[in-house]
Amino acid sequence: MHQVPRFRRGFRFQWEPAQESYVLLYPEGMVKLNGSAGAILNEVDGQRSVADIIANLEQQFPDAGSLEDDVSGFLLDACQQHWIELS
Amino acid sequence: MTRPEASAPVNPHKAGPPLWLLAELTYRCPLQCPYCSNPLDFAQTERELTTEEWVSVLRQGRAMGAAQLGFSGGEPLVRQDLPELIAEARQLGYYTNLITSGLGLTEAKVDAFAEAGLDHIQVSFQASDPELNNAVAGSRKAFDQKLAMARAVKEAGYPMVLNFVIHRHNIHQMNDIMALCERLGADYVELATCQYYGWAFENREGLMPSKAQLVQAEQEVNQYRERLADSGSAMKLIFVTPDYYEERPKACMNGWGNLFLTVAPDGAALPCHSARLLPIDFPNVRDMDLQSIWYDSPGFNHYRGDSWMPEPCRSCDEKEKDFGGCRCQAYLLTGNADNADPVCSKSSYHDRILAARKAADHATAGLTGLTYRNANNSRLFFRG
Image (cartoon, rainbow over all chains, first blue to last red; front, side):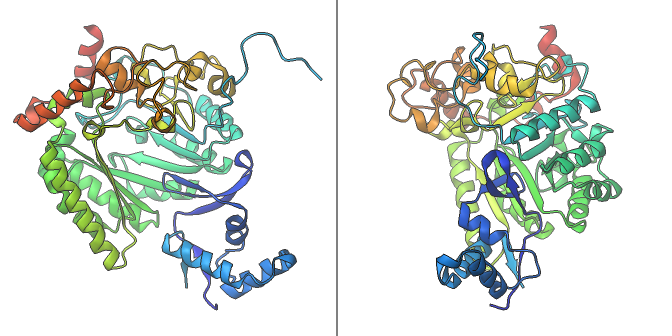
């Protein structure tokens, strides 16, 4: 929970108007992110901890209830995919 | 409301945007790899696009939605305006990839490109040892230079992608190649078995691995992958197997004019980097804007949709999966680009693939029998 996620070197996260979505760009590759994946990764700035990110998202989406499991699950998954690193 | 013009239909196939733009900056290259995907008659191409023309292409592509940009060639480092093009591309928001042989690269350039915003450098190798590498590349100094540049790329903090084109003369080195990549700290390793277009088609008999060689290589890659996973390594191995050993064709380019847009050194706009060999008129960025080229030109609409398909593709329930395979391969092997890719066992020309496999089982020729990719040999192809 106190770990801080950051994008792995060579990975870039940005909004693409033509695709109306956030994408993750990396060497010769691109992942189009769905709404929730985009919202979570949009919080990753190398400063905020996993707990900060969950708190921010719960504030942005007050009707969604507790997001802890979904967010930490997704971040762990992104880590296993080597998109982000936790430190 | 304005009424649409009654002339040519606008985007008749409702194509999506070109998300990938490949900028082939030049056909010039110091190496002579006999599997080069450039056209056989590349030496005939004159008048490369100017810096201003490339900048315009980059801007138009980005406005249409292109997000991945490859600077390729030939050897893109030959272009003196590369730093300027990188800076422009990065500022536009592209993810910028430099695809290079490493020849002509220096540590100062590696740093200057990073400063300009380059996201990634892919260095290609020809083999895991200097002797074979330099023999395939047709250059005595290539291997040492590549090693030095791979280290410089790593040092500068780029993600590192190493690319090896695999063929019958280096496929026995698979383990050495993967070990070399691991030592260099590669993030991604592309082990791309030759695709037979351009110079590689010309040299197919001398390049194509046998089935036995391929099976062994696949085993070695899988074992290496397991070892990497066990050790927690993030190095990713991408093994591209040759479609000549498949029974169904690849979904070439994810479909014609679907995601990929290539602009050749002279401004020809192509749905893939091999499509120039097809008997189709492709538009040029000097004559038309990129939007009209991509959505409305006859060249790009030629093989969109499936109404062009003859049998066996027309009634095939897999046509939406593979789009009938590769048009260039159909043309090279059957003389008619409309035909099913002969890799498909349903193709009446599939025996030509079987014959190539058989030839690969019995091939004995060494490297010296190959036609090397250089300007002198290229001129033979258009002087006839």
